[in-house]
Image: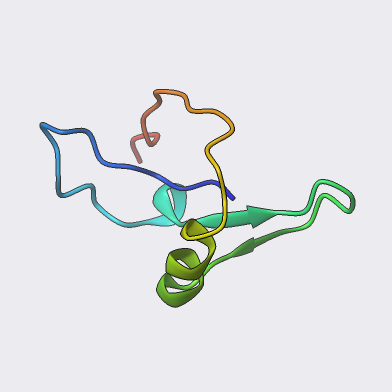
Length: 59
């Protein structure tokens, strides 16, 4: 699961294509957008595997 976490100094990260929570199937390579309820359910059982700083591309 790829999830955007807002920076402490930017709590209102705008939602858009590059901040949508994604589930990536490592076997098939398929990606799908997760809804808010599914994100909350998965956060209860998943562990953090990695993190990186980045920014959404400007349009």
